[in-house]
Amino acid sequence: MSRPTGLRTVPQLIDAGLADEADRDALTEVARRLPVGVSPAMAAVLTPGDPVARQLLPTPAELDVAPDEHPDPIGDARHSPLPGLVHRYPDRVLLTPTLLCAVYCRFCFRRDVVGDGVLTDAELAAALDYIRAHPQIWEVILTGGDPLVLAPRRLGEIIAALDAIPHVRVLRVHTRVPLVAPERVNDDLLEALRVPTPVYVALHSNHAREFTPAGRAACARLVDHGLPMLSQTVLLRGVNDSVEALEALMRTFVENRIRPYYLHLLDRAEGTRHFRVPLDEGQRLVRTLRGRVSGLAQPVFVLDIPGGHGKVPIGPGYLHEGGEVEDPWGRRHRLGEGR
Ligand SMILES: *Cc1c(COP(=O)(O)O)cnc(C)c1O
Ligand code: SF4
Image 1 (spheres, helix red, strand yellow):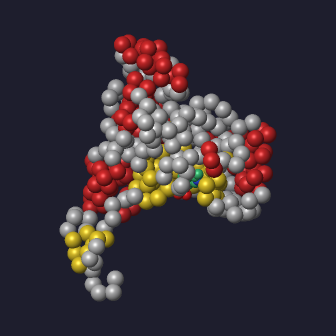
Image 2: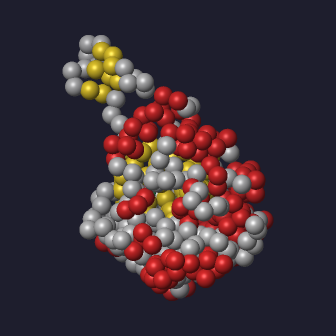
Image 3: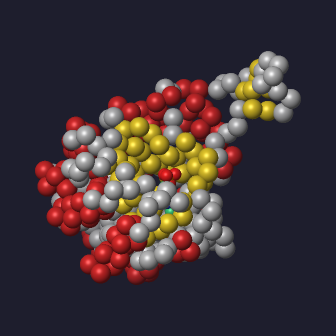
């Protein structure tokens, strides 16, 4: 079935056969609290219960908030000097010019803030002034929301303003758009991203099935345009919690000239318990991947420490007490003297 207009409301989901009538009340409550949105491109590929549907279709389980879940699980608010900015690390800052997205992921750690709001001109001007006034800011990371849903002209103005700040040497854009709304990656968007300052594109994708022919073509346009691409994946129960799914996804990234960057342990946003994969299970998956796929296809497994204390690698350790090192297949070897 083709669903060209995308799906934004519970009645639309029910009409499209993507939600049960019996869940109408619960889903209406979910949609009252949190944004819902399935883009046309993803509506065309998903089938109920598949890894794409699991990420995007709302479920009554989201109403179940666990005691250890939090509306701001990684403590962005306490590091926000101004609206639209999060400054946790000295050399880089997050800038969120919009909180709109092309799809609304059911596990999003910013789910309490995404869905509405674009920085006003005055807020954007203040955020740019802050960046200008802090020469230690070497990199600006545009995130949101999804910055690539902005009108290309608006995005181009922001990119141009950042490009003009001498101490800002690197720009990074975090996005799902190339896969979930590939039609947006047109000449106007490419033009908006064409500045002398290097622009890295960090693509958020959690399953190889998101790579449609149109999505692959959109990624190729970005890379051909001179924009290096990185990946970002969240480890999710029922989506990519198998070595086969992770292997296929990481290989797909590399085959599309996207260098795997981070595999995230799920942040504890409210109503996301059904997506959790325990840390030790994640480490086993990452270890197995190490023994099976190219070094080019290895992401760093990371945790954003709750409370705003930064991201750290949490991959399995290979060094053991007593001078032993473990190989990718679990066998231990003695290290020589002096190591
Ligand atoms: C994740 C994050 C970054 C980027 O971290 P990298 O490790 O450089 O990818 C920067 N600032 C904040 C507040 C973040 O949460
Ligand atoms: S696209 Fe990103 S910011 Fe938007 S809902 Fe999904 S994870 Fe959250």
